[in-house]
Length: 108
Image 1 (cartoon, rainbow, N blue to C red):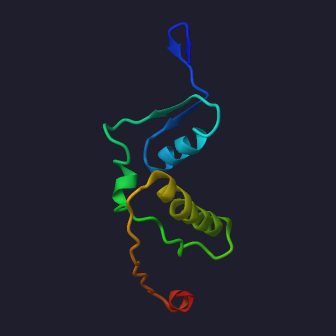
Image 2: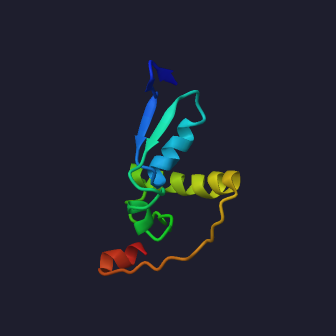
Image 3: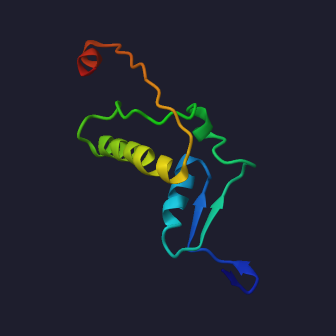
């Protein structure tokens, strides 16, 4: 939308990494003018690129906490919505989790 030569947006998302792109995608489902500001020439070049493209397994948060619930929800959305809707190529891989204390060993 333009007003007197200026661009006007309902929402401006800073960064086109995984989180910024996901937020922008969700907002695109509504009648909103959304802009993404990204300083790099390509998306997902900073923190998003540093995790090797692996979706978090969700084993770090304390079970039952809000953080743990969000991890599970995020993984569900990736696997059951985005990969299907976007025909996004992906591969399931296993994780190796190390225990360094007896408490961590008991949690595994």
